[in-house]
Length: 386
Image (cartoon, rainbow, N blue to C red; front, side, top):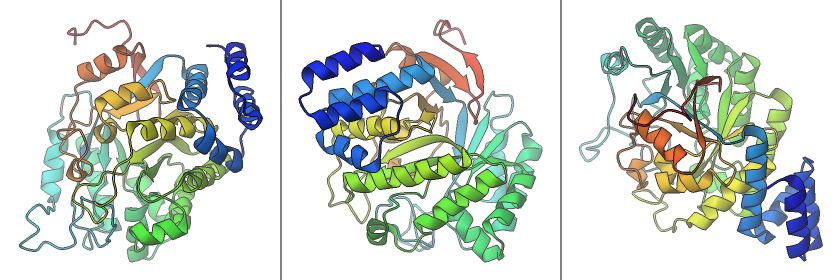
C-alpha cells in the first residue's frame, strides 16, 4: 500500500486521535518521540504496526531481503560473569560442567581451514569471557586467521568481551579496538546490550559491563572506523518503557556516529538458566517488538531477524513486519541460543535453503557482505542450480 492509501485506511478505521497523529508522523517520515513510541506499544493494533513497519521496509528496500554466507566460532563458554538469563556460560571447568569447552588455537585455525575453497565471506567470533584469553591472545588469533583467509571479514567480540580485554590490558577502548583493527578485525557484533535500563540490568546481569560502557565501546569502534550491530534482549522482566528507552539510547548514538549497520531484537529463551520460571512471550509479542523497532529506529537502515533464535517460520512472518535481513548461513555449531531452548537446535542453513525461505514469502534474496554491499541477486535463480 502507498502512503495515501494507508492514511485513508487509518483515518477511516482508527478512532484514537493520538494514534492517528502518530501514524501520520511515521508516514510523513517524521521522528516519533519516546512517549509516542510507548503509546504505540500499549495502544496500537498489531496489524497497524505491521502496516507501518512494512511500509518503511519497502520504501527503503523494496522486496530485497539480505543474507550473507558466514560461520560462527565460539572459542569458549567459560565465563567470569553470571548473567541470569544465560544458558550458555560455564564459570569453571569442573567435573559437573560436562558441556564446558575451551578450543585450542589450532582447533580454531582448523575450523577456518575447513572453509577453504568455499565462498564464505564472514567469520563471527564470540564466546564467554575467559580469564586467560586477553587482548594479545585475540590480536594474535585474528592475525593468524587473516593469514589463512585474507579475504575473510572478521566480525568479533561483544562489548562485554572487549571491555574485559581492555581493562585487563590497561588500555582505553579506542586503543584496544585500534590494536584489533590493525590485526584484521572488521566489525563488532551487537551482543551484550541486553536491556540498558540500569534497574533491570542490575537484576539480570549486574556484573557485566554497564549500559554506558556498552555504548562507549561502540562509539569508540565507530570512531576508529569499525562498524557494528546493536541488539536488545526482550521478553523477560522488562516493560515496553524499557524497550523504548533502550532503542532511544541507540538512536541517539546513531545520530552521533552513524556507525551501526543493523539492529537485532533477541528473544529471551527460558531453558536451562536462572530465569527459567519466566514464561516466554508469544509470537504476537515478537511481531510487535520487531515492527516497533523498524518504526522507532528511523536512522537504522537494517532490521535483522536472527533466524537460529527466532525460528524459520517466524522469520518469514517478520519479513512483513519491518525485517529486511535474516543473518547468514550460520554453518557451524553455535550454541548460544540452542542451549537456551531455541527452536533451531541445529542452526545450519545452506544458501539454497535461505534463498528458498525468502522466495516462499515473495521477497527478493540478496547476498550481501558484512557491511551490506550487495554481492549477488538470487531473485531469478532457479533452486537446484547452484
